[in-house]
Structure formats: structure tokens, C-alpha cells
Length: 414
Image 1 (cartoon, rainbow, N blue to C red):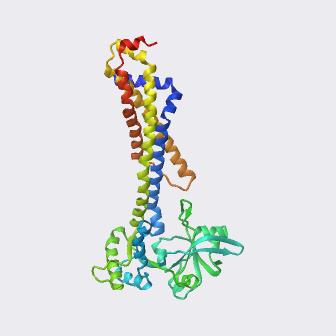
Image 2: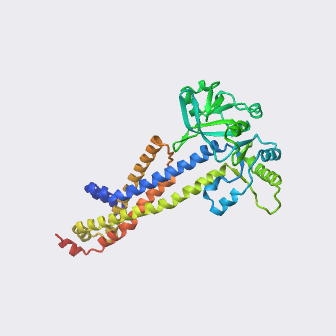
Image 3: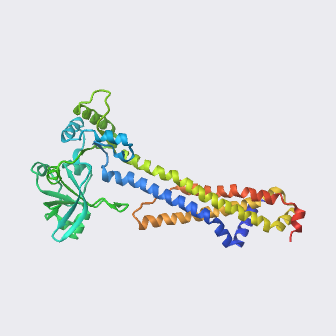
């Protein structure tokens, strides 16, 4: 039997029992759609972290000298205790790093963890849960902040402890409706009156978390309001990504000298770049990638068993048809191919419907929720391969059983 004829017969049999075929494939459709949607969300998150989140949190072409590594969430208890014993990163350390990397575009000192969350007020309007950062002027260069109004914090502001503040776009919009109206106004930050010097252009949101709900104050003013924090962070911006490696090595050497560390003694600080955040995120998503195949496999197995049972029922219902075909000269291989192709076409259609459903769900998630989603070609190919593979695996036994039917006995069946 030619393959085209087998496909034609398979499509006719599926169309003859449309409702049964759909419910037969429901497990395959759901499993494949789940695979496509989860992979799309993870890939979208990975792309967002790489392209946007790292730049928003750390800055482009930037590395940091920190007391604790970015991946602190994945450290064991003993490592966390060891990190807690490290000395604080200080302004003197920032100066040492600046001297070691004179070609840096900017070297900034900023307040570290824990970051205060404050209340900002103007007249009768209040905005809560606003992140407050104490910074040196270079931090605004490190973060590539673009101002839609006003000016940045300057060196004289830092040295003279001027009560000024730069606010994120969301804060300005909630307090003044029109963000540009914020410039020159006096607002209260946790009860302290500050003059708004500038408003920063919006950077967007991720997972409901805004990157525009923050305030920047001179580090000297920050200490006056919140006291000395447990740690600070030194950020170094280079002119290109290629320059980061050598600069990191020199910064590490300068920090070891500044902390008086002898050869062989481990660092009591961490030098991290944006890639560390990407690696940290991918280690978290690897857990999902480990669980997804197991969930999909369960759905495919359940769907495959249903398909096998339905195909066995189909063989029983069409026993007389099989006997008639054999009596007219059809070989076992022809009968086996007919039923195997039918199972393959059935599951391939299920895989295709699953991909379309998953694609639509991923588009809806990306359009109507904070979650980014990005469809990957490999996930679509894998989903189709899973569907087709299930047809081959679970269609072999029913096809072999149909091929072994005795034509005389089959013709006697009423």
C-alpha cells in the first residue's frame, strides 16, 4: 500500500469519528501546549533578564565590587555565614578601585543591602513602597539614566549634603500627574524635605515590579536620613564589554591590597558582572526545565495509552474490513502500515493542535500579563516530535495485532 493511500485512509477514518478523535488526542494536545507555553515563558524571561533586567539593575558594560555575590540566594548556610563575616565595602575601597582602573567611564559608590523602602509625599498625595538609594554622582552614568526633566545629582550636592533628590518616572507621575511638573518642587521622603532636581525616563516593569518606583539622594544625605547601612556597592562602568575582564582583574588586585590579604588567602569581597545575574537566573529556571519534561512525559504516556486503547477498539470494529483487504491481496505489512499511519497522523494532528493552542496561550500571556513570552523554534519542533513519537510508540501494538488477524476468521465476523 502506498504511503499516500495510507494517509488518505487514516484521514478518512479520523474524520468519520471526529469527536472521538478529539477526546482521544486531548492528553496530547494539553501536554504539547503546556510544553510550548512553559518554554516560551522561560525563554522570554531569560531574554528579558539578559537584555533588560541586568542593564536596569547593574548597568551595561559594568561590573560591581560587593560584599556578597549576586547569587547569594543559592549559597548554603556555611557560605552565607562566611560572607556575613566579611568587612564592609567602603568609600576607601571605591577610591582604590578608581585608581586601579583609571580608564573606567565611571566608578560609583551606592548604598547596598538592605535597601530602604520609604514613603514619598507632596501635599496631600503619598506614594509608598519606594526604593531609596544613596549614591555618588557617577552612579547615574553607570545606570545610563536618561533625564526627561531637570538635572542629575552633582559632586557639590554630595559634598555639601544638599537636600536634593532625583525621582523615578512612576513616582513623579503619581505625585504630580505630569512628571515634568515635579522639577523644582519640594517633596517629603520619610518626613525629610527634599528638592526635586530631576526626573528619570521610564524603564518599564517586569512581573509586576516597577523599575521606575525609586528615588536617588546624595550618599551623604542618605546617611543623614537612614544612618550607615550594612554595606555599600562599588560599580565600575567600562567603555566596552571587552574591557571588563582586565578591569575586573585589576580591581580585584586593588581590593586585596586595600584589605591587606596575603597570597593564598581567599577574597573577602566579590567582583561580579552582569553575567552573574544571568547565570543566577538560569540556575533558577533550570529547576523548571527539569520538572517540565516529567510533567509532559506523564501527559504523553496517559494520552498514548488512550490512543492505544482506541486503536485496539478500532481494530476490533474493523475486523471484517481487515479480512476483506487481506482476501483481496493485502499483505501484513500493508495492514500494519495502514493502522500505524493512522496512529501517527492522529498524534501528529494532536501535536499540531497543541502547538497552535500553546502559541495562542503564550501570546495571550505576553499581551495581558506582566510575564514576557518568546516562542522558540526548537520547542515547536520538539512538541511536534513528541506528538509524532507517541503515535509511533503507542500505535505499533494495535497495528501489529491488526496485521496478525486471520482473513478467514475476520470475514466470518458479523
